[in-house]
Image (cartoon, rainbow, N blue to C red; front, side, top):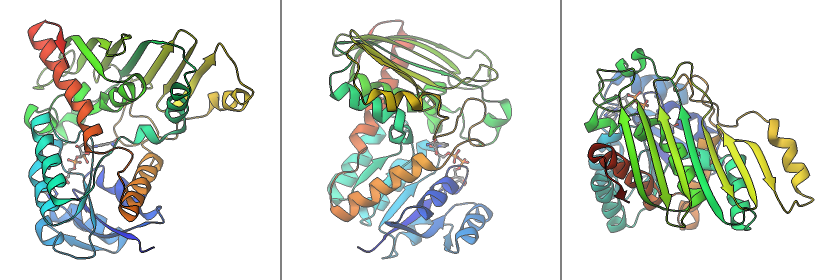
Length: 348
Ligand SMILES: NC(=O)c1ccc[n+]([C@@H]2O[C@H](COP(=O)([O-])OP(=O)(O)OC[C@H]3O[C@@H](n4cnc5c(N)ncnc54)[C@H](O)[C@@H]3O)[C@@H](O)[C@H]2O)c1
């Protein structure tokens, strides 16, 4: 089967991770890149020997571009996605899919209308630890789920927020520690526990006073299945800790740190558990965003998700994380912001 031709729009920090991941996927090949800053696009294009554009609209006229990776700042995606969908290109977007459900709905409508696939990067779901937890949930091994928590106690320096004018702005980042950083674990939490029914929350700026958005948020959740949970997300905690997602039930408990399985215990033990228990000391396949956004980010999660997306295009079936899945995390975070602003319990 012919390889799927990918192009990258936005070659800043995460664009090169997509390029490196595409190079490792059998079903995919990189054919072009685009960035409004010529030197940024050039650097990536030269590394992979592909054509470089400053105007993505010219790039998506190419027939050999079947799919685009949207790696521009979060709040710039809706218009670009509409153009790409109209040009018949499948779209794999970075997280968050956009900065609001209103803008996400524009992307979903445009891709539905054009009949192209839409995917949203949540690479943590593709790591082995979260996959094992999801499987155990499907097998009913936790009993009744009663508690699900996400802890993202990270550090981002003032230099990080100063490294792009869009960072930490309401308009282009959409939010702070929860919308930009914690969204990976917030997605995992809903993937494990099911949808959230209502939230109570407090957010503030604990360190980065000049930001428009929160660098600390504490959230109480009630899931639709009746379970409770908490989210604690921050970029104000030095030096930063592994991000942890916990699932607790009446018959079992498990948690991951940076996607690596760290605890996995069930009342009804199975023989196969012994092999899984051996992985409890394994280091993260994803790397950690605890103290620094990219220096330790590994490409493996992106590689697996891009492989899934390329296969979805080849086989004409939905990718594992589609636009509606991408929307769920942003919908929850929007409700959290509303709860924090009003001091009230908000239904999601
Ligand atoms: N999945 C992850 O773990 C992960 C990690 C980092 C960033 N991200 C996401 O990736 C996105 C980008 O983040 P970043 O840190 O790479 O930002 P960045 O500022 O480093 O890079 C964005 C790039 O987009 C370019 N750009 C802006 N408008 C453009 C346009 N119209 N056409 C082409 N290029 C354009 C900019 O010039 C810049 O080079 C954000 O949404 C962020 O949330 C995801």
